[in-house]
Length: 511
Length: 90
Image 1 (cartoon, chains in turn cyan, brown):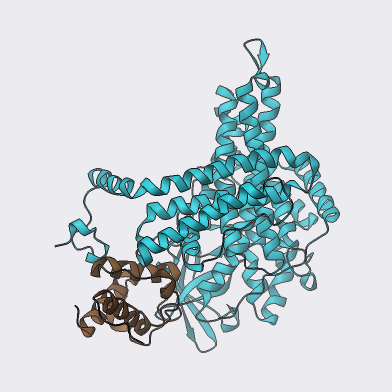
Image 2: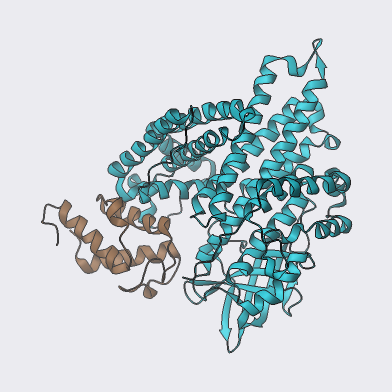
């Protein structure tokens, strides 16, 4: 397999702060989330302003007109944009991650030279097309084909939920080659046979473009193959590490927006002769929101740093994506709740944050599927759970839970062997425990960077370790829960099909 | 205990069912990952199904060394042999 080179160099902390400050100034003047949602598209002047800022070229190579910075810098920009509007952040984030990474890492030099300058300037915006109507998290089920004919690649099929699809100048398409292989193929907009469907009407990020793309006898030069002709799925997974990390950073921005709005509201809204913020229950809840934001930022930064130094990033990017997207939904829901009836009024803005963030638990790998993958990796790779590794008052607590995680994995291996993958209830508890623990460890590591962060880290670590322990406790009883759940599901939507392979039938169903 | 050929054809059928492909495309030398496109979770799913179907315990650590379909068959045969009281193969 041709392994994509995903390592990049990042800006210094001071440079990154300047970059973010510039984006903030621009967004404060020109990005109005409510207005953008009502318009249903990102305004041309906002796209033009982002081009002028260089937002589309941050992580693209300097030799092709980009800034040559790392994923951590792209994340910082996307986080800031998401504070103002998630559709704008999604457009830039998708372009910076999935939309361009395959071209940067895998394109032939002549193809990279032809496309990357336009992508870096933002003249051309990138998109990524992998999902199909019947192939979401299960990419192996995709039906779009790419076949090699002479010096051309011919594509046929249909891709769903293509972000940036309406206006993208090029698409990185994942397609099946031969019986089991896959390839990434660069398809320029306007290639004969490419049809762009209507915009989908969505729950959130309504100004983000989401379309279906159809490919009918679409012919592109063979040079547009990105990477290998057979190993495209592995290459797509490598590109996904970028995509998931950038997506997590957008979640952090949304959390920050929800927290800022909530802090302002509870400080001014009076009930029972006091501001809401004076009530201990409110103070605890808002502090919990801030702690989860701190943890999400820490775990996302660790994933970005892993990519930027060329370290394995599949696992940290999955952890960051799951944690940040789940906690963003939780924090935005709390924001709506603490705003009371105002929270459901669209003009206030927090309702939009809640709607906008919902899809992130599905984008780029549904969280439940990713949790199963994390748990399976824990059971098969025999790597010890991460330790804090630096002087921290939380090291002992984190490491004790890490040891519990390792012990739980050992027990599951011994008790079930390979059959453990059929125990999805068990795996989900293990996966959730691992994600909570990883976020606690990242928070403990981040605590040392600024004194003002100590309390936030303390809150985050205490809560997350408690959650990890609770998930591990739940492991013991979940076999019975699985059986009862199966009976309830059967009553709700019927018995398993009679022709289901016996291997997938429960023991009591077998003849 | 299943005959070797029976076991292999059952496993062939299982791989085909899991991957939704024609059983004829699965040969002894087919590599689970590179040729059949099974990721680590898919490989474990296969072994898990066999483990339940044959009511044998398949060690998850040993399973990690499996590369080809023939490796998977040998791995299961060894486990069956051991658990039926026979000597383990070299």
